[in-house]
Image (cartoon, rainbow over all chains, first blue to last red; front, side, top):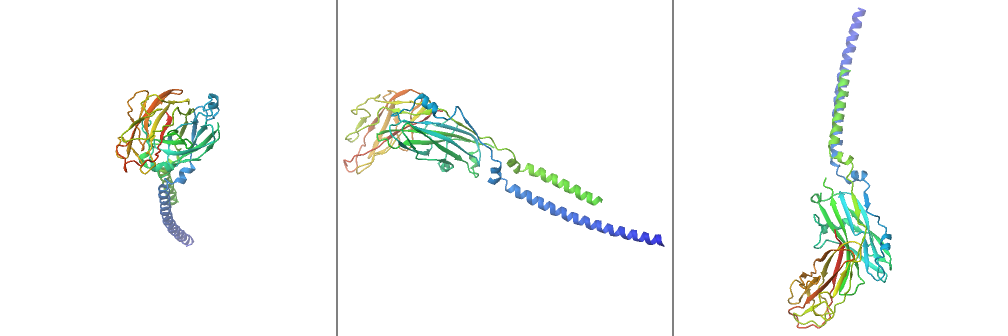
Length: 214
Length: 183
């Protein structure tokens, strides 16, 4: 009798455990479903925000700036040009940018050397190239001139002095897809408005920009 | 125990699948390194000089042709353009309308009513075939080497008709020679 009673208790306990296990399995399935939903939502959320700027900014690379032989103006002084009364010159007149991509920003200086016989105020502005444009390049669209900024568009330069003016290109994240892999040329006109003659002289620096093709 | 094991197994599979999908998604691009941007700045200086910058045309009459010289007659090598920098340059030219008096004169390809024409010449060609425009730059010379010089000149053609006959006012215009590094 005692063994039968024990057997009945064991059976009852086993049934109870089985029920518990079945219940646990159902709970597990519910948990699994919830986990799947949460993971799916997370995946969709992260996937949808993959183009957001903040994510790219976190992984922003340090641009590699290569200056061929240095940008110090001393080498110009060694050549002795331009001297007083000989007009003005530009150092760093061509900047080539390769692989620029949405979100990237980079600066390079253009140095104005005042060889004139008086202190002068120069005026800098962006322009499209004229008839002479580098082969394989297109004029930089005027509607995107706002991507570029001139640190000081009206710098004063002392007699025989020089001034570095930083020019910056900042490519927005909503970059037009048709510009990918394309090359563009933009000019920076440097004028001296103190000239009074019929024939006046001006200089242009160039930025030759090739965008990342992806 | 067996069902708990299955649950854990499923969790592992789902986790692995999610990880694979995440890596394969565009997010993977974000995790990957961005392209290296290279900037090169030319070492050297550009500059130009010009020996003649004044041109007093005097009293222009209808359809009159006046050259860029001391007396208005043709002198193809009166002015010299030089490159005193240490890089080769391209030089372009651009003009403006004549402004002043009662009526302005517009710069265009051919002289006309209140329209004047301006053409440039280089290297003693004597053809004055370079049409100076106000809306855009036009090549006057390309790849002018460092320390090199070229001669140049201009030809002005007065309007063929003046509105209001002759307003007698002083009119001013400018021509800009702009140099950029030859690439």
